[in-house]
Image 1 (tube, rainbow, N blue to C red):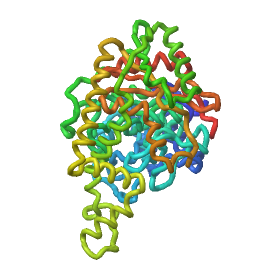
Image 2: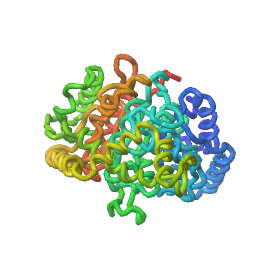
Image 3: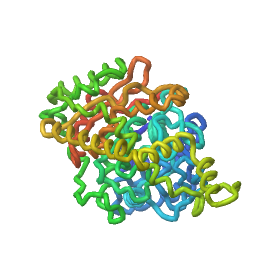
Image 4: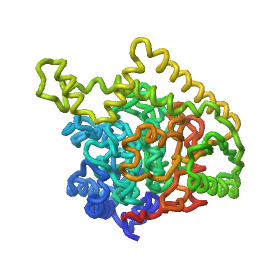
Length: 487
């Protein structure tokens, strides 16, 4: 097996046993990037090879001395381009931030470095995180390593594709309504949205502040758990982080699922779900039952209103957060204007892509005088009802499962002109963000056309250990990471 094919757990054990060095992993990562990046375009920025190799050599020397090392020491990692990195361009895949180089690291990036991870580069994404296919990037789409004619999902499509293609072992994405889990499902890798408040958002370019969370992407569950453990925890720079101790998220991975009760909501297996995807997910559920889990039917009656509620809340918050991009302080500025108001209008019209402009206008409308009560406040009330549905369910079950997405990866261009159809790609993922609960997508097989299917597991707030335990059982029961045939 070549080094770029390793999972995190295989790489970590190989490093510990001295079978190869951190330098070898980094060389393999850059060689793989050189080989496949022209086909998939997962990265927007790649660091200089020599610079990262020098960091790898430092880790190898420290390991040779017997120094204590972080849990990610020597592991090549990619970071989504809406997470700021000191000295490395961060654009959120938007022309309005083209060329912007932050003077500081996001908290999660600082914690990555402290854990010994080696940041290789910044990954492509839907502009400002607004999209479900990665086609909204101002710098061109990323392609799915399983089928180069298909999307990798969004908005963290670059991170998911980079991991699936073997360019890196781990990656960070951000998840506002499914933007880690949906691309993880489409690309056949593991993706996690933590509990809201588990991970600092300091240094994350905001889309919708009450929904955004940074989360890990990995080929295996162990890698996702290790990465989340490295970046999680309270941060004085982010008042929304919870003062909760972060448990050892690797401790329960081998406990299996015997004795756990799994809720299967009827609303997630209704009209709109591909029969192929449904069959694959239900087969994985049968495996968990054979391994000792108990599955029970349940109902979450307000899920049907999730997409409508989400897109009102998210777009309203986006219209406020993106008001700062006016061309006056940094980023792109239109010079073709007679006065300051013209400069604002022309800068934002030219700097933002069509989908971002659409969402800003929708969000501004939902917050405008006479409509705030009818749209935004009503959406927030529905959000509270959805959260209450989950609270009641978790009084009875340990986890709730569903498909990650209603379909497997669709073709590039297939939905780009139909916003509603595109938004429905998130029909099963938005609820975890609205309720603030953690969720994971783990590969559970492939459908008839050979594309991967994601199995989503949701648990109560701050119960990530149970989530990883169940995901690990699913991974072992149905088989782990597979090599994408598209490359």
